[in-house]
Image 1 (cartoon, rainbow, N blue to C red):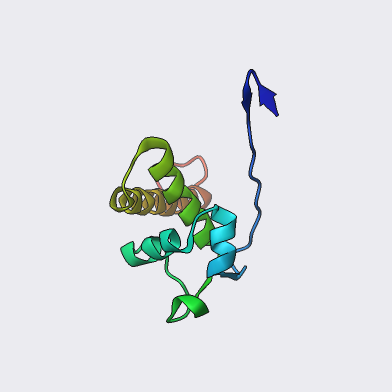
Image 2: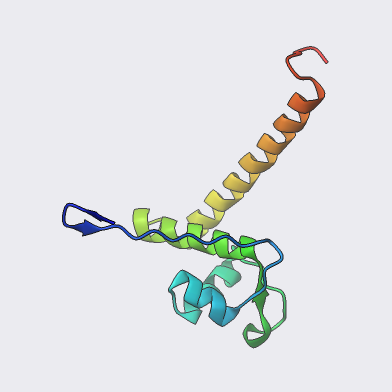
Amino acid sequence: MKTGNRLLQFDICILEEQTQLTLNDLCCACSVPTEQIIELVDIGILEPIGSEPDHWNFDGISLNRARIALRLQRDIGIDLVGAALALELLDEIKLLRARLRAVDAECPGDNFC
């Protein structure tokens, strides 16, 4: 899609958590070199299954986390430690929202359950 002189690119990727991606698959999906994904693992942003990079597998959640971290780094200059913190906070928000939905389901419209 073109807007003015800029070309907008949309990435749509629907993956299940159970999807297994190799290190190479993840690098291709994120358009980054292997070293960048290894750095995300070293800092704790990603947790691969497997002991060595040649045997690593990642799930769909890892792809999402990698893309968010790399986007934060690229778009607003956050270093990877800051991106890791931002991801932790996003995870906490997601957990709290799920808890709030559970409470709302138990007590719909009632503030005094």
